[in-house]
Length: 229
Image (cartoon, rainbow, N blue to C red; front, side):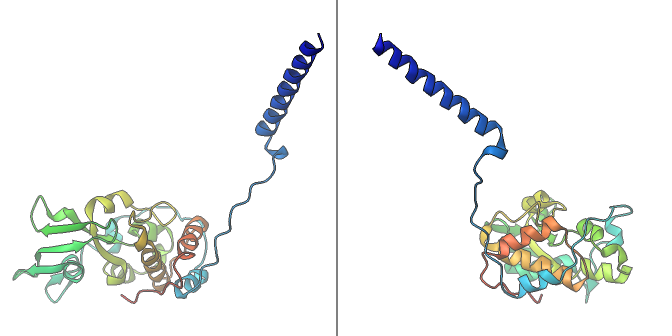
């Protein structure tokens, strides 16, 4: 009988411990806090400039259209902005008499892929020119207050533009750093720094979530500088 009593008492203790564990699990206020290793404070030029940007919520997207930033690509000396950026970012590029890049090779910074480019109806979109700060994002974070001339300059500024994998560009859409970052992680430091440089140049602001995301990236960048173009 004593043996049976001991077994029953052991079972009762196990059940009681299980019940107590359930209380802890379903009542967070009774749980011990968990701690995460804090992210180191980012340093460097990009981090310093980020701190100078105004932090605000998004403005309404009312009246946004691509035409608010000029009617397509601007032209300089007979070459449009798209082909100027292609010629800058592709290697072994060939250019025809119309100042159109007809072929070349892109080491894509967004995905890390190598893309053979051929101009054509079915292939030109394999490489797209990304506005690093998406134009609709810019519109909601200060560009509404810019003049039409300033907005067109923003949309055609080499600082704002990168030739990238078309599919990755479509996935980004109008996301900011809080919602989309390049899959190629080694490029994220430069990507965020470029966004900061554009926002500084054109007096655009960041949201709190966007700033937090940028700081998280920059904390692992070791003194990231801003790009000049």
